[in-house]
Image (cartoon, rainbow, N blue to C red; front, top):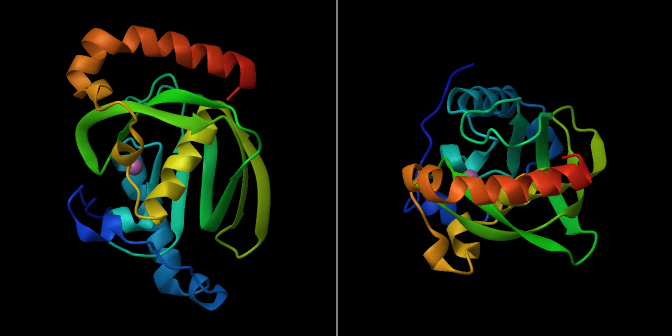
Length: 192
Ligand code: NI
């Protein structure tokens, strides 16, 4: 296992649709090693998730994991490590909420992004088993962010009001309190 370089906004690989992984590829040492590296790279960077094209591998693989007290997103409830291969998401209803997001590939910027709060998620796990689950609340937002990456979309593309863009330091100073209240209401309601 090793950490890999996280590429940043402007790198073309972040703007292309990543391709599906075949079951045969998924069983290969190369792809299993990539999954290990994604997990290690995400953990080293304190991310909530990481998509393979963020380490310049244009495959539809993403990992999500949030541990309690994550330094980047301390308000996010824990999410057990989830490795998704060829994920497909589907909103379960029309309800959306503005969520303040950042991204390891968009250094020092955050902004308000509308995200669905109830999501059906289907994917293959790293052993190739089909998984189907429902993700809600802030966690649903995290899953949408990662699947967006695989489609070449960054959170800045979904910011409806560019005036909500803020550096991390100014978020802490001016916007954190308001967002934490909104985030807490979502977590209270959905438990995630
Ligand atoms: Ni991201």
